[in-house]
Amino acid sequence: MNLDELLKLIRGPSRPTPRQLRYRRRRAGALAGVAALALLLGVIVGASGNGSAGAGGGGGTEIGWYGHLATLAGAGRGSLDLEQRAAENNAIDRALARTPFIRKGGTERREVALTFDDGPGVDTDQLLDLLERYRVPATFFMLGKNVPEFPETMKRLVDSGMPIDDHTMEHPNLAQLSAQEQQEQIEGAAQQIEQTGSAYPRLFRPPYGSYNETTHDVLERLRMLSVLWSVDSQDYTKPGVDQIVDNVVSAIHPGAIVLMHDGGGDRTQTIEAVARIIPELRRMGYRFVTVPRLLLDNPPEIDDQGLPPGFNSSGAG
Image 1: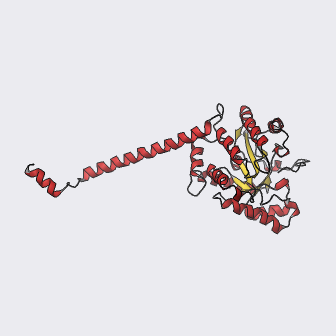
Image 2: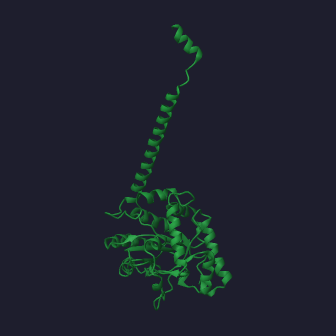
Image 3: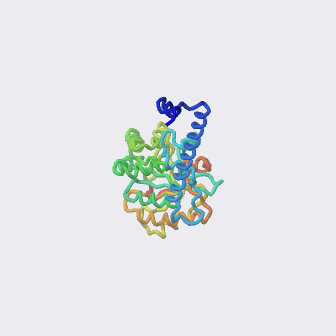
């Protein structure tokens, strides 16, 4: 060992020059960027792979890569879909300024909103499997009493980013209740839903389609829009898969809001019907959206929201 090597050993490693430090910082930053990009691509590819199996050709346009990321990010503060949710909330507010309820969207776009009532239930996860496979969003109107019974299902719904909205605590006929009882039913369910980590509901569906002016007064205080429907699948009567499919496909129209159920009994027929309805409506050129997205993309013609004679004579909802 010569003298210079001995001195270096005694002094220890020399301090890097400013130029060396800048180089190291740039290199570290570049490596961090590459790692982040690789992670992002992995998330996108993984989400796309999980969502596309068995979906059929050309059917995955509703969610896309951004939707997959929003799904994985969830619906909390700072999530990737926060800006879209704000726009959808504004669309709900615009509708509320003109009407206390809607039953369909506009006719400008071939969009349809699938909605599911009375969950969560034992069949909700199987329905979610199907919707994820076909990359179809939907809107869920939940019973407050059921929410604590299915914590894992609710977590999955919250993580999916799909709207989780209010269907009362116990499914009563609201028109037969006092103002205080109606508020307890609606607000109680909203609180149960919010406790799962979901946003506070902005949409409400009255059980049996039953409501009165008191209902609308309560909803106005809670800033909720009542959502009825324009296509009734009648799946709650369990008429058979073929009949459920025909009830939906034969009545479909641009801006349709379709009534279906994921709770309140055995929903095997509903799930089998949905697996046929989705590809059939896509073949007809329809795109699936949530109710908030329908309000944003395809605002309803408010003057055309009146209830036709005999609406809901079967007591659906």
